[in-house]
Image (cartoon, rainbow, N blue to C red):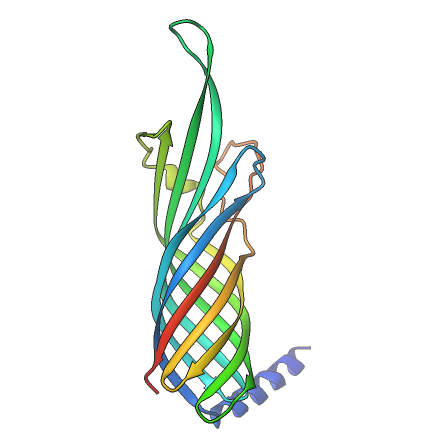
Length: 215
């Protein structure tokens, strides 16, 4: 099995070594949504952005590694019930929990060009992406009033997550446009020591990017 994998890798390297090489920069508007298995939470998508660069190796079949800085936001809305100490009546309050994750994303995409006229091409791409979390920030509001957030709140999310990107793109002259969906594969929740609940949080992202091909 190892010999087969090694031979396949050598064949791919030899194919790409004689292939076209492209380089470019890109920016994207994103719509991210952190999904969870907590039944009381109502999920809400939030906008974000991406900035980075890509390399494309190949022609009809191509390999496209990328690296970019990304801001991914997510929001949960839920209600809590408390006892009013003044009259001992129950009071229901609305809670908004918003999280923002700054990540360095490194996708490696395998692509196939469907249509390739002289000035424009249409392609499909898919591949894994690693997200390295560089910063975490949180905001909690109860009935519209912002609350103090514990400095250790960010510890409940992991620093490395995995996803799968699929999408389509169009190249026109020196410009490139991509529409993709990133499916979160790993649970970004890092269960605290001593916690008993098994919560699952996954980061899913739609994004539309526009790039400029330098080469």
